[in-house]
Image 1 (tube, rainbow, N blue to C red):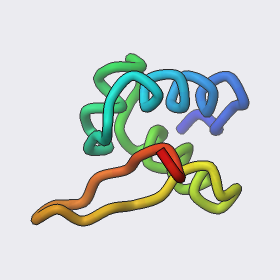
Image 2 (cartoon, rainbow, N blue to C red):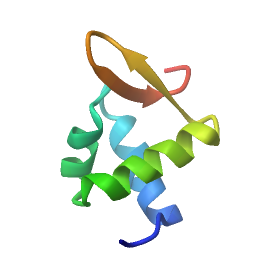
Image 3 (cartoon, rainbow, N blue to C red):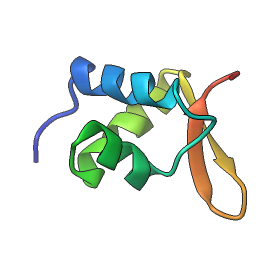
Length: 66
């Protein structure tokens, strides 16, 4: 499996800036990458305190503080 790049993380952030929140699979579809790789990117961005997970009957991610 490919490694998470800064470019991929930026694509995830760019997409999430256009929506209130999204499921990981929606993010993967939007950025054109495999979901397991996007999951890793989202996890990394969460650890960097740029994203947060929210639970609205299902798990979503969003830009922290947005």
